Length: 148
Length: 148
DNA sequence: CCATTTTATATAAGGCATGTATATAGTTGT
DNA sequence: ACAACTATATACATGCCTTATATAAAATGG
Image (cartoon, rainbow over all chains, first blue to last red; front, side, top):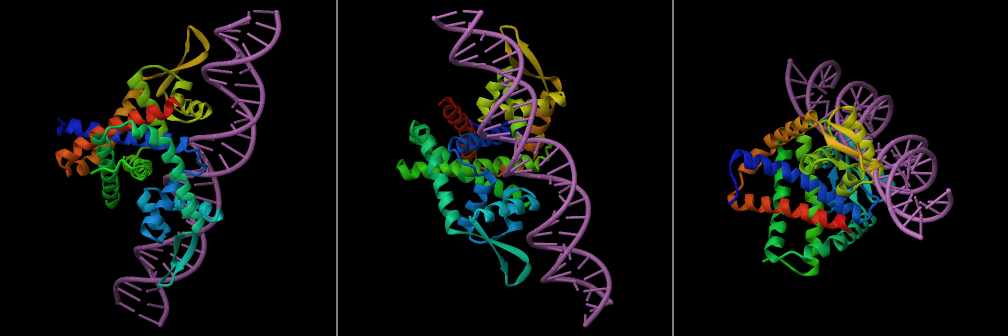
């Protein structure tokens, strides 16, 4: 039985933040990447959504626009993304994923998965279903928090 | 039906890292804290486990010992934790949560929960059960990754 | 159609975060 | 006692992130 009481909901919120960040840091660290989580998230956004403006990326990841500008600068310097201009709006900087960026993202995912796989394989199919659904729910929750 | 194929497992691992970090950052940012996620995680560890050494904290959070020393320095400077010595081992620095630290942790949790609660309240009880179980599983997975 | 306001991005400055390498001090084993 | 090991701290470099501000372009409203 899951508590729907305010206390239960609040405790769940705190635990999701806490354990979500801990798991992500632990797993990505074990994968031995040089790249920050925010940089990898930016690449993943571009792969999933196609070209995005700097401001859109910042909004999606809930960091400030200057922070995303800096992240894009580093990714651009390493050739993982490219900046273009929007023909309809000369103010905008349209960021696109390069071939090298897609490859780096793929390599990270493979390395991370290789580290996490043994732990996941120890779970039953119910728990795998829970985690699969939870990944979707976390995305929806973050989307909703960003809409406000 | 949840895929138990290697591809399904690997994709799940990548998604959990990606969405876990995004949700945690988004929610904590919306809570408007000054404190970093690692600082809050350190406080949470101390509350849950009692006094811990600097090295144990670093291991649990999968950051280097110097990084945790720096985090503890900042928390100590703000009076949220205290350093003590282990009578059985004079090398060790035993970190303990202060009253002010527990209060700050509680305030963060309340602020964060207040932001996330509306989104969680929109979910059905099945999804709440999924997230509750997922929080436990993420903790176990991170623990297991840290054991190696 | 120009002046004002708004929007998109970039730059600047400061502090936190985090890694590698190393120093210091204490413990353990022989 | 000496050597090896362990726990933490320090030094240094780089990256991350925020607030405040600058620059340039677009939208608005007389």
